[in-house]
Image 1 (cartoon, rainbow, N blue to C red):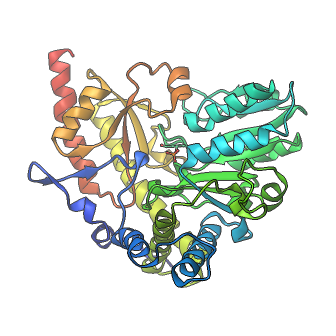
Image 2 (cartoon, protein in one colour; image 1 turned 135 degrees about the vertical axis):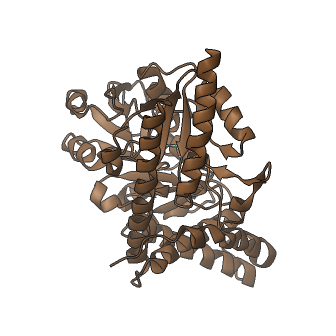
Length: 421
Ligand SMILES: Cc1ncc(COP(=O)(O)O)c(C=O)c1O
């Protein structure tokens, strides 16, 4: 039996959270754009740079240590993704760069008349790289529409798939509405037509356990800076695909293994930090009572994270409903919190999201306003030009912080209402 998260001890790992604005602790509801990091992540970056800094592949101590650290990081991310081998882990600048890179390599296998499928739910980093790669080879792109509740219209998906479909690119969860998509069903249907499946897990990864086997997909990308690490992109690819696809690389770079996919010198210090982030999460699993291997402890950590975040999301959704603060875009029903991440998109009543964001920032509450690069979603739901106020809770958020936001909204939204803004 696992224990619930102890938020106060969690928060002690994150010095950034004690930041004060106008005498009060800042509220970090900006997590979907980047999380805070625990001390050990910053310490790992610093320790690497101060004591092990070198290029890799040499026989001298710092280079040997660099190789060992990268191997350890690949093993950690194999656990993080549920991969079958660390050779399936590729590091890169960020998810967007890795996706452009992979799209260019995959496009060499496509021909005019081929079809790619993207979704109207996705962040543009999982749309435009595919659209541009398709354009380069004369392939066409079809889009899975979203329903008004932000779930994907899977009935429409069937009509988009045929034997010319080469790839389906889908997000595991929306970075705007928090909606979790049924990746397994999509992957199974795509595979029936021989298409590959690329999953953007950037938003999902901070909230839920990734399991590439359960998803039955071919590629998954995520970004460590969204789950308590430094700025680093991480790609998992099915081993035979990474082996057999031709990567764009310089001649002296390795021709085999994940290094074949890593252009130029890696950001070793951020790899060291990302390794520490995975170990932070695994230790969270120990803290809630799991004492197995790293995969088991990650399972436990994400179970505890989900439990905590669902309680807070319920509180937030109920609070927004009773305030009449505006329209929640997506799964607004508090009984449905298991189908979403703790990211809530609000079209506030009587005040533009950007003005509300600024007013909240003055009160020390950090959140984002606009489309958050979920361009197709905002377009298809008619949310442009103003977009939404996006409130993103991570596992270090507290009920008190949710209440502070609700109190601020009660003042700001009511005040905007009386001004008729
Ligand atoms: C769902 C989603 N996908 C992709 C990206 C792009 O990630 P990166 O900044 O690592 O390129 C983001 C960034 O916010 C995101 O939220």
